[in-house]
Every structure is written in C-alpha cells, then in structure tokens.
Image (tube, rainbow, N blue to C red; front, side, top):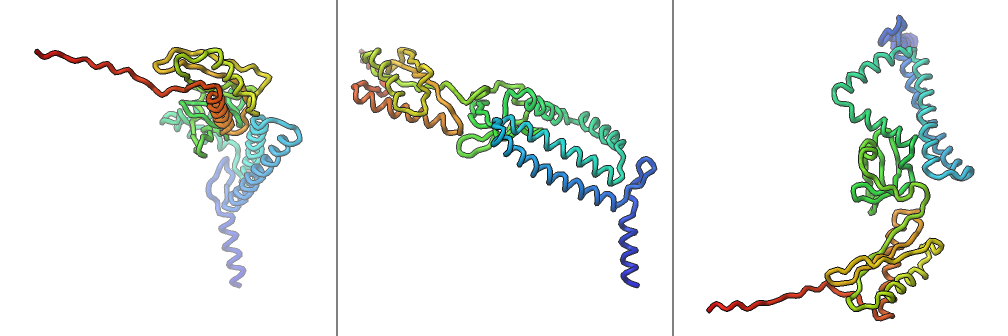
Length: 288
C-alpha cells in the first residue's frame, strides 16, 4: 500500500506541469529527460570532436589550425542537434526562441554590445583565419602561441607558461603581428656592436660564418648583414637570417645559439665588443 502511494506521488511529481507553452504543458519529467539528452549530447560532442581532430591531424595531415576549425564547427553542430532533440523531448516548442530572442535584444540594449561584438569577431577569426590555432603572434609587445579561439576570447600561451586572454574584438580592432600566417618560417635578427677601428668587412664575414654551425638556421635562405649605424660607443651591425619555429622557445633558442657563436668567433678574430663609453670633460672656473 505504501509502495503504491510512493509510486503515485512520484508519478504526480513527474507529471507536474511547470509551464504551458502553446497550450502544451511542460512537465518536470519531460524537462529532466531533456536535460539528460542534452548532457549526453554535450558529452558526445566533446568526445567525437576530440577524436575527429586527432584523426584529421594524423591521417589527413591537416595543420593544427584547420583541424581546430573543423572541430569547433562539428562540436557546435552536434550540440545544436542535441538542443533541438532535448527541446522536442521536453515538449518545448521552438517558438520559445522568440521569447529568448526578445530577452537577448533587451540585454543588448542594456550593455551587452561587447559580448555580441566578441562573438561576431570570434566567428570572423574562425572563417577568415587571419589568426589560427598554432600561429605565433605578437600583440602589444607579448609574443606567444595561439592555443584556443573561443566564441568570446582567444587564449595565447606566452613565455613562462603564462596565458593571455584577449577579447576577440580586440584582435580585429588592433594591430597584431602574425609571425607564421602562411608557414612556420620566420626572419629574425641578432644585433651586435663592435669597437671603433674594427675591420668592417671582417666583421660582416665573421657574422655570416657564425650561422654555418647552427642547425636551426635555414641555409637555403640567404642571410644578410647590415652596417646599421655609428653608435655612441660602437659600430652597430644587424645579422638577419631565416629559421623555423614549432615551439614557443624556438626563436629565442636559435638567437641565443647565434650570439654564442658570434662571441666565440669574435674572440678568435680579435674583434672587440666594447663597453659603453662616455667622455667626461672637466673645466676649471677661475673665481678671481
């Protein structure tokens, strides 16, 4: 008898109407089933898209940015289908989106313009791809690798395992340097000063020789040395060369290796890197 009463109470709770939409009641039971379906859809979206990205990078040999783009749109497509299915099971008609759209419009009027701007900017970044996952970019003096492009913001990994979260709208509205837009090759440089009186041609030759033993320097892309300026304490030179970067530290590593080799060769050739120098003139003032 008690079991029947409990079952009856649970059934009444399950069939309890929460709201009536288009003359159709939305019950607690239908909402719970809809939530379960939506949760399963969200879980499957994450699992399937993660496996899809692994397959595309291994078998189809797509770059990280292209694979990520397919992953994002596949995720939201599966999630969208799950939402529609959950609404169907819950008995909530699609006309509910009319109410939701009205609420969103009111929200925009009360200061959600930035949210919408970042959302649209995120879609623009994904479709036009001026910046994509895996690119090395420089924004406001910070150099890092693009890890994730979300609907609202972009995550960039910088040195020291630090993450910078930048609103998508900021990336489109401001100057951003993409070092690897088309490929992983970049042109970088090392600057050095030598003492006045040094043999300029010997300095140029030695700087070019310093690249020969560095594996990360691309030998088929001609490096070049510029005699930059007559500085206060030294003759300034800039050595420009090409390399490829696949990790965040690659650029700094190759520059460090080149500097070490320059220092070694300069010592062999007797080329001196001067300390900063200042001439101090003393004047004696006759007070008589």
